[in-house]
Length: 180
Image (cartoon, rainbow, N blue to C red):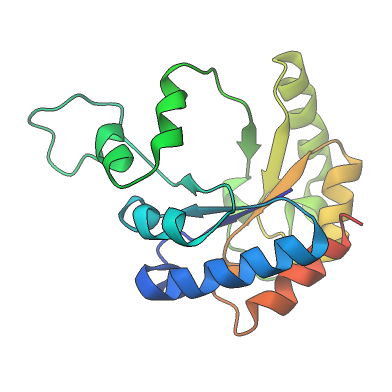
């Protein structure tokens, strides 16, 4: 599985996010690989209404209604059409993700290349807690994906390689080759 974090890239915001969603959905249908867009809370209503993909939001704050300037209430995300997120209150975490901070956004080096032992250790920790691991940081090739899976991750998390790309469909298809 591949998580695509839209972060706050221009191509992952507003109407451009909707265009990217269509590409992700097309590739997911063609490849039969689970692709999960992780979008900004402000875009989730429109995204959920335009796709059959499972959609995650990047962030909510676990605060209650009240004086919390700048906080994103889970209830507000639900109001925006992400009813399935209500289940988050009833469930324990289902995945854990690890990204070495020094490699996040790297255009030259991935965690699978530079720190494979970190993936192995993170997988061990995740398994000890009965959680599947998703790994990210600099993931940009089929080889990165393949190695991450070989080391025990169940999927990868990517952002700029897809969202900031001039050809996100081509980039995504390259990553999917690592899952075949």
